[in-house]
Length: 158
Length: 288
Image 1 (cartoon, each protein chain N blue to C red):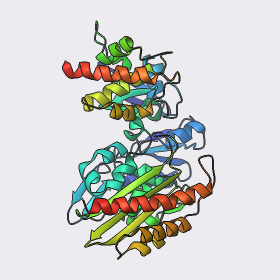
Image 2: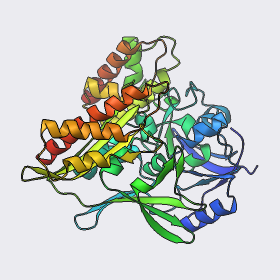
Image 3: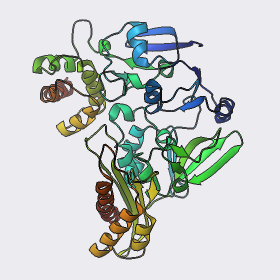
Image 4: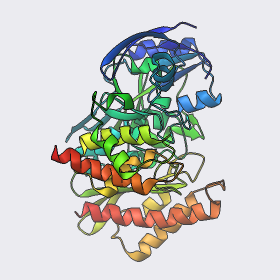
């Protein structure tokens, strides 16, 4: 089957790739590019572990074909921290214990970033609703929400 | 997922020609949130996938006080949910779009996909029924317009013929004395399908209620209008008694099944309850 040339800008790097159309964006990021921070949970769009930001919008990367991401700008969990400083949301997840096994954490952090970038003054209820597409199978939701609320405050003050 | 040949046509005609040429082995790709799940599960195994994303003019919301509302088929659920005009004048549709999946899914899923998929439980179907939507359909042979109430044929089945593609939805212009509401009954707050969905729209007119439309989803083989209930309410002032009669009529017009989400009896009961609530809310909103 014919492979397609795609150009993906992931975090700060541009990747010119030749991929099979059946490869999801998630598989392209993990297997072809080697950025394995984005996780595959359910692979049906329900759990949010594979959340990445495409052109400013959080999407489940298991529900998008790699070829559909051609010429788009993608931010993954690897793109959040600068060289020596964690993103405020990453820092808050550490400070507040917003993770247990850690598998859902990249998805929660990336989904939170996209939401807080657009809604810096979001209430707790709005944050909870916005994160409804993310599941923590360890059920550590209380600490996750505390972390996002705390990060939102840090982001507002910086 | 099986491999497939991927096309990105730049015109509707080209997409329609591909759909006709590969009839039976091709699928259209819009947001992908239904198709990709089915392809992974191998309940869909297209040899050809035709993306609509590169075709200009399929995305966006236009409103004009004369000609009304036009929504491109590739408009995302998240865009509909947050659009000021949709929220203010076509509130039921903003509420329906906002009920699909979660935020990440709504950034991908499109209204054209939600309707073309033909699910009886589609969250935008009941609102579009209540808002009097027309479906614009294009093929290489030309364009036709179908009222949404005749678009659905059965579960997963629509009036779309080989080579036909839904390009837009149009709704009549609305004024401040019109209101609408959609309520979705579900088990989880987000990321769940409706077990009952009801949308109502009404015009408030000097104490009387007119132009009432009620859309039902997930309670029959297709989304449908509760026309008997509409007839009971139309032209009258909304009393508790009339609401009860409309609720009973809407229940009677539904034909739900029992499945893992809930029983047919519960669905039928909830059709009545939600018909009452959405009608009252539509009128309250119409009266501002």
